[in-house]
Image (cartoon, rainbow, N blue to C red; front, side, top):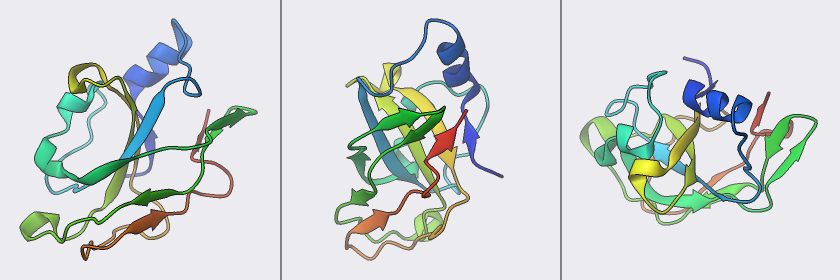
Length: 137
């Protein structure tokens, strides 16, 4: 599968509008063996907690220029070693954190990026976002 924006997020962009710069946007490592992307997914509750690995990273210094969303590179701290289907994390999920999983909107599913899949070893994992930006509209 290629990187995708969630359709419900795109609908929100075209409807009432979404301000990614003003809210808290986070990224979390995801085990695709425990979560399967679906166009119908809208909120973080659609992603089983067992599929989310480690502590989410808050995206810092977010920008939107010419339809391209970007942020500083992200660091996932002390990502625990996994076993079974979660031995490697194959994707990164980006979402707008409302403070409640049931209303935290899914933004993007990234499974095609340099360094993916990644196998946690208990240390930090740094994600260097593409120089062209995280995603473009």
